[in-house]
Image 1 (cartoon, rainbow, N blue to C red):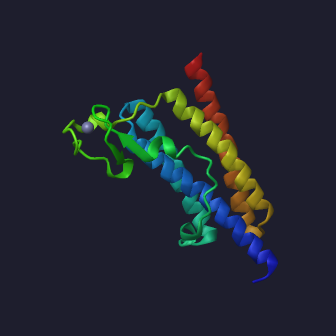
Image 2: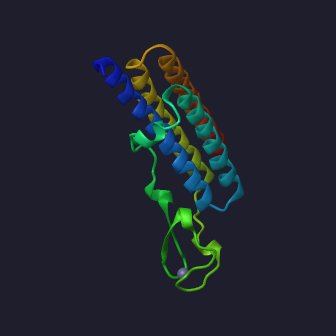
Image 3: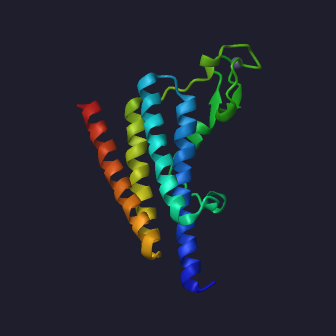
Length: 172
Ligand SMILES: [Zn+2]
């Protein structure tokens, strides 16, 4: 592999990581919260990540996910685990129990409260950081790969602006 090819595949691994991390985050966030408007926001944000991933896979290949390098731009700790508010039992969000195995509380005892403003704050911040990762990756890529990465970076910048707008409206 030439050094240019190596650089480009490194760049792709980071770009795929930024998108895959977002997808994982929004899926977990969606599962962890109960409030409908917040759930809908996370669902929509997750849907966008899924679309971005398929665009990226059109140049990086369907197995690119396996080599993804996660940039750590999403607050995964806030959503990876859920805690029973009755007894404090901790469970993985992706395996949220329908009943607390320790105290028997119903599923809602595990649901997290994340404010809608917090959801848009996370999205604005993550999209901005993700845009930086994608721009840097585009700078190391060529041809169609570069075009796709640049288009995704622009999408993330637009996403950050949109999230900031939602946030401003909520705070008005
Ligand atoms: Zn419990």
